Image (cartoon, rainbow, N blue to C red; front, top):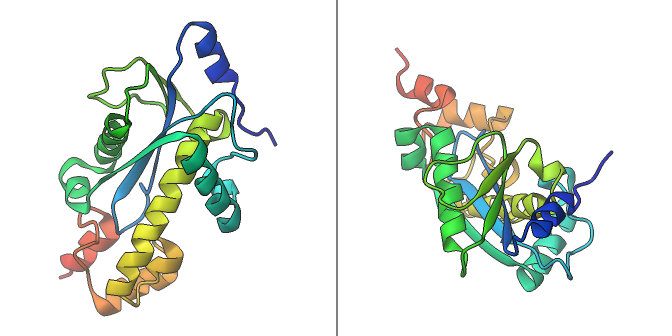
Length: 205
């Protein structure tokens, strides 16, 4: 199994780019909660060991790497709300979160490595879309870790306000428990009404 490396960043540095940000989003699939994006600029001289696609890391490892990145890299996090997801659609909302994360960095990057096959509208910085980027670039992997940890914490907080849906464990994804709770407890303000399972419950005949 190949792990992400610094090769894409190194090639860009050879072309004169210095501030290279990896950008990734988390939370396209859930039925509830915001979509979260992170932008991370690594220090090439001080890259934490073990960066990988957040989905391949244990909670303990992700938490440790999150702390290391906050000490040793430049990071920014941004969200797009449930209302924005329902208004725009999930793809455009996730791109909006990415743009906001890039804009939230203390100083602008000069190049972006973006997970996926599309460059979000509204970005004026030179960018490259990298398919399965969180498994190829350590900068994108770092962004995936920061975004996932942030979003998981948001869902744990929301779970305390709306018990029964299991968000502290399923992060809003459509698990069996979550779908049954939707049927039994109904739709919360944090559910994405444009998503079919939620929409169907709201408009049951």
